[in-house]
Every structure is written in C-alpha cells, then in structure tokens.
Amino acid sequence: MPEHRPVISSATRIGICTLTSRVTGLIRDMLLVHTFGAGWVLDSFFYGFQIPNLFRRLFGEGALAAVFVPTFTHTLETEGRPPAWQLLARTLALLTVAIVLVVLVIEAVVLVIWLMNPGEEAQRLILGLTALMLPFMLTICLIALFSSILNCVGSFVPAAVTPIILNLVMIAALTWFRPTIDPERGIDDSATQIFGVAASVLVAGVLQILFLLPVLRRYGVGLGWRFDLRDPRLKKMLASAGPVVLGQGVLAFGVFIDAQICMLLTHVEGNPETGTLFGLSFAYPLQEGALSAITVAQRLYQFPLGVFGISLAVAALPTFSRLATRKDWTGWTGEVGSSLRLAVFAGLLAGCMMVLLAEPIVRLLFEYRKFGPDDTARAARVLACYGFGMWAFCTHHIVLRGFYSVGDVRTPLWISCFLVPANVALSLVLVRSDAVREAAFGIATSVTSALAVIVSIVLLQRRTGTWLVNRSLLAAVGKMVLGALLAVVVVLALRHLWTAEPVQTALPLIVHRAIDALGSLALGSAVYLASAWALRLPEVRLLLKRRRTVGGRGD
Image (cartoon, rainbow, N blue to C red; front, side):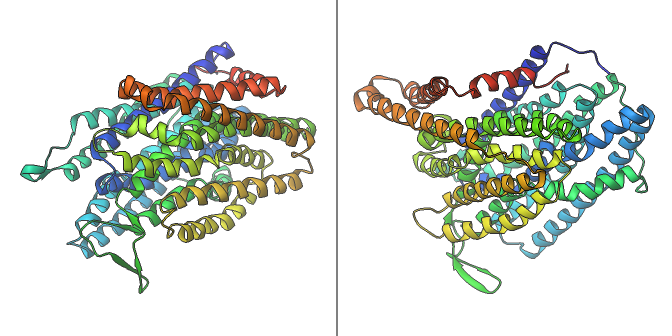
C-alpha cells in the first residue's frame, strides 16, 4: 500500500483534476453546439450518446464502487492480495461478458429498426450514431472498475484524469471534423462529419483504458480474467448490484427517459405534423433542437453538481460506513446531518445563480455561429427550471450514501420505482403547454428529485432511529434561504445598471457578456458567502475543512 502523503496536497491535486475535467467537458460541449447548432444533427448525436451516458451515471458515478469496493477491500484486508486479485479477475470477466451481451442485443435491435425504416433519413441518423457509440459502454464500465481498484489501493488522481482524456480527444475531433456548409451550392455535410466525432468517443475509451493499465501494474494489481459464478462474494455483489443501480433512478434513469420522450415528441422538418403511437395520433409539441436545449442545460447544472454534490457524497461514504459499522449513531447522525447541510448550502447557491443568470450564462458560452438567440432562450428556460432543484440534486447523493452505509440498498429502489413513473407522467402533461414545452423536463426532474429527498430522509430516519431533520438543521436552512434571497436582490439591482444600453454599446460584445454572466455570478456568490458568515453559518468553514480532508492518500 502507498505511503501516506500530505492530505492537503492530495486533495488539491484531485480537485484540480475534477475541475479540469468539468472545464474541458464544457469546452467540448461549446464546440459541439457552435459547430452543429441546435438542430436534428446535434439532437441525434446527443441521443446516440444517451445509452453510454446512462452507464456512465450508473457505474462511473458510484454504483459500481458501492457494490464492489466494500467486498474487495474486505478481501484484500482479511485474506491478502491473491484472493483479492482472484475476485477482481472474476468480477472483470462477469462485467465484460454482461456488457458485451447487452451491447450485442441493443445493436441487433438497432439493426432491425434500421432495416424496417429504409427511407427515414432522420431516424437512420439516430440509429447510426447510436450503433457506433454503443461499444463505449464496455470501456466506461471497465474504467469504473479499474478506478475503483485504484481507489482501494490508495490512488485517486489517475481515475480523475480519465474523463479529461475523453474531452480532449473529442475536442481534437471537433477541430478536425468541421462540417462544410455552403447554402448557395446546397452543401451541408454536418450529418456526415458528426460520425467522425462519434468515432472519436470510441478512440477515447480505448486511450482511457491504456492510460490506467500501467498505473494498475505500478501498484501491483494483478489483472486476470476468469468466468466463475460460484464465488459467494460475487453472488453477494450481484444480489446488491441491481437495487444499487436502480436506486439512482430519479436522476440517472430520469435523464435517459427524458431523452426518449423528447425525441419521440419532436417534429423533424419535412416529416408529417402528427405522429402515431400505439394506434393513437398526436401533434408533435416539440421542434428540432429540443434535445440540444435540454442537453445544454443538463451539462451546465451537472457542472456544480459534480464539483460539489457528487464529490462530497463520494468523500462522505467511507465515514458514514465506518460509523454505522461501529453502531456509533450519534456520530453517524452528526456526520450525515453536516453533509446534508453542506449539500443544501452549495445547492442553494448554485440553484439561485442558475435561475437568475440562466440566459446570460448560456449566451456567454454557447450563443455563437449556428447557436442563435432563440436557441439561447430555449436552453436558458430549461436551465432555470433545473436550477430550482439543485438543492435536491446535491442532497439526493448524500441521502443515497446514508442508505448504503447501513446496508440498505432496497429502500432507494422502491422510492425510484414510484417517482420515475411520476416524473414521466408530469413531463408528458407539461410538455404540451406552449408556455413550457422542453422546460417540462426540468420542472419534472426538479419536483420528483425534491420529493425523493424528502421521502428518503423520512425513511432513513425510521431505518436508523435517528433525527436528521432537527431545529438546528431547519434554522440553518432558513438562514441559507435568507442569504440566497439577499444575493438575488443585490445581483438584480446591479445587473440593471450594467445591462443598460449605454454600457452595452460602450463595451465589446464578449466583454459585456462576460461581465453580465461571470461578474453577476461572482457578485452573487460573494454576497451569499458573506451573508452566511454574518449569520454565523459554519458551512463556509466546514466546506473548506471537508475539501482539505477529502482524498486521504493519493498520488
């Protein structure tokens, strides 16, 4: 096992990798939007990426670690390395076979649909991109497994670097595969060039694995491949894998199902104005670019969610589990309650700024070339709706880890089984309103995520016999809301001054946009943090302390 390294140094390096990953991912998405615009081609690419992205959310953001890491760590500590490597070899074989079978089945379904619709160019574009990017599912799952192994042996940074590789490869592909568009000559090869970008996803997946293999060898990890379902440890992991994966349904499956509904209800130029489903005719409520607007909004709200919410939850799980194992419910309650407060604290700040600054942020980052003002308005409306649920998105990951720490993987599953259908139903009702349209998916996700958090906290309290929601927590949340409202008032007042016409005409366009978005964001954050300090909320100090202690050991 590696030697202990300075905690602050390790945490800083991990934080830099995570932030770099998010920034390069944002640059990648900006190039995608600038190059292809909010139309059917980009909609098709985002749709084709949905299944690999679903597996990334399910396995890459904690599910595989929650199932595999405790068993592997216990084996490594109690039985030594050879049995641990044996477990790894069997897990690797089972995971590979399962994902390959899933990929082959989905590829076969895509091929059948392709053959049944030979004349539907729009649908063939979707199917072609989906079929091309499906094998990325395998690399995602292998990367998640290898990353979990490295975390178990004390190496955290390499796993945090792998998403940067994907982003850089896609950025290079977008720079190379620029579509040729000449309206006067009738040339537009966007639908062809997007396949080059999709192929770069597969190349990136291979490079990510090649990057991790030498690191695994350096730490003495014995990689093997042995298919054997008789291992009781493997059976135990399989028994809890399903509930853990499905228990993330509100956020993970919700995003995936939203994409299916969005594409089903989107009208493509040149096609009939009405569609048919199960023998029923309906008018398409959405227009081309709907999925692009939703995806842009999702990328923006997932930026702070990944940096604050998910990272906080990943760091908190070992502590929750250790205290639950010791039956130290006083310590467990304090730690979970503190993490909940931190999640709400960060989520309220991010959410308020999204609601208030949705349009300036989208305009600054995306409104260039083929992405126009109308596209900005559509994406901003969706982002604002997601902003209302940011506190719940951040808190949901903490509550899930609370259940996992006490060995309860089924309660989150039952909650998802109820709320995912409710999310779908609410989306279908709202999407038909002219005033809502694609923003329906942001509203539905925010509402159902908030319900998931409330129900989960109530059931977690019953499960553990503790009181997570007490006067102290409610008073703290009240102060946070007060600080958020003060930040909103201050930003609204000053934005009125620097968005005046004389100021707009005096500054270059990009400078004005940057001041409007980033200046407002910095001001709002400063007012919120200052309010928290004045109201004697300890979250600023705790957040800094938590960031210093995340990571423990690492390279």
